[in-house]
Image (cartoon, rainbow, N blue to C red; front, side, top):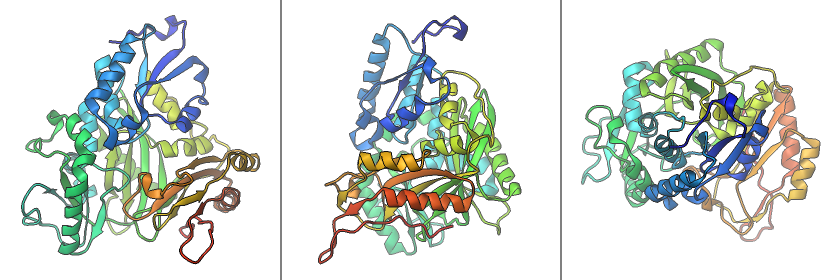
Length: 451
């Protein structure tokens, strides 16, 4: 177990293990207040921590434990910022090292979407859609289907809406099941290896990742509530609006702070304060995706995640003058986070998602010179490319309907200023893709139709 000493007695910087943290997020971590007193050490293979198709959990955990235990300086905390599989690897490693983290069981009560739904229904039944588990290994998985069509179907464990579809007929549902039978077992193999069955609600420990979850359709204004738990006390940091494309699945931007009515935001906060303790999360950030439909009594939970949304970290920085990465570090070191509200430079901030509706071969991305020039005009710009020349967009994780190729984060005085600054950024950061037959290469512009 790693040794720790009281903060006042330390003469060295606090040392944190990083699991699956990319350069762009490490750069943000090194810019938080107090970073001079921190030492971030990335340990473990990055690809294995972030790609389930390359992850052998047992080998990864053993490698990290060996490296940490061999370091004579010891470590004070461990953190990760990504989704599956690092979101599960990290608490398992923390448990072995005795470092601060949420209980392992609570992570699986979030990430196993059937288990999570059962717990949610027990606490806030009015905020949970009807749902039903569908086993892939059953010869007739639709034989007991009770939910009416159309419905939404997704794996018990997924991310970025992978294998998530709106289906309107039994034939469409059968096609999704056939595809899941081919693709899902390899994708969820690390999940099944790590799954802590003791975390299951009664009677559900036999349900592993080789199942699908059917849910009645939800709709309305989509958003994401970000918060943290420290020593059992739930704190809501803010709510981010999730603006979708017309396909109602893919996002065109995420905007903070939410424009939802205060009473609706209060309802969402009350849901979080009831459900999060029931799941058992503690000493961790979390996020809850929700829909608000004015025709319903309560907002509806889409899903709960046992981690922060790294994509939103600097949106909070722009508006509140404090990043959720600061909260992450505090919790990783066992400290109570410090949070400010509306003390940032901007009144509004957004993460704009660059997308195209089909797989494309990339022929040009913004150069480092172009990115640097854009930042001279837009000093708060955070730009993240998700494409590389000579590669197809499908080589990156994508949802089931569109292809993402970049993120642009900006702040603004108001909505109009935000949109003007985004338009400028788009003109300064060109992408190009292989032309269709008979046409020349053209730049693909992100959809900005939603308001």
